[in-house]
Length: 397
Image (cartoon, rainbow, N blue to C red; front, side, top):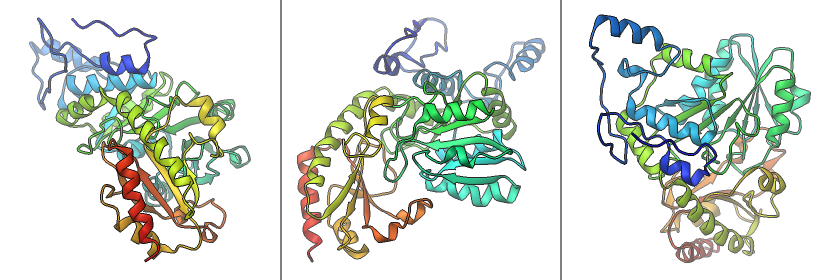
């Protein structure tokens, strides 16, 4: 039988030892096996009845839609990382967000959502919340105006920290104090922090959501979302997820488990590379601002120092106003090592043009420059800088 990981172990140790369920008698493999199953067989009617009677309160292997040992192993790993009571897996990060909103909100409720949230989460507001009479108000990405926007019907504060476009930091412990003093739920999108560099539940959040598609998987070949909660917040999520029959493929769970073992090592390399590219960008005459919370010039740097244990490969930079959209596109199209893509968290470097109009509370961004987001991958940063040099050269064309 596998030994339990030390309860106070660091993220590096937990990533290696958590989520290793002994599925069979005898010796066990280092990696949990892939258990593909829809139907589960029982030894007797009595056993079937007894296990099914317990499964609403316990995690049991009773039917494919209720999960399987491979999925359970990944749930345990995420719970270890997040410091959570339990975790559920969903087909995509967006599905994880949607099920969280569906589990805790009902018609007539009001939710406060940070202006910095993932763009598809905004679409959920328009396509799902609003038609079902669940009102949403966006608050400033740094959380400065949350208190004044709380209403009698507010039930949830939903924050993404750092923000998804220019990585604004908010004071999550302060938001937790505001929420809990009023009986509200605090939900955090923790995709940036990946359960390794930022831990919302330890900072006071009740629910933490991650797109495991990104750094947890790390290889750009699987879609998945996770929701981890405190013990007190668990039941609504568990009941609603079971009611909707949401689960993930054991093959996908295995891929995420396999990728997660190297998460800490990969993040350290992403950070090292990004912090070599960032100063080079800051020194460019064409660049107005480089956005990364690990940079001392970033407005949220002090909160990042207090609450995070590192940064990742994400950087955004704002071109000076002299350069229009066409110029930014020339820069991007000239790059050879940066793939043009909207996701991130894999081993490869990516680039995309960011539409800052999506940030509804950003005051008059139209008067500022074009914003380009980079994901700095695991390539040699010297090569990445050389590639960016030819991109900047294209601005003069």
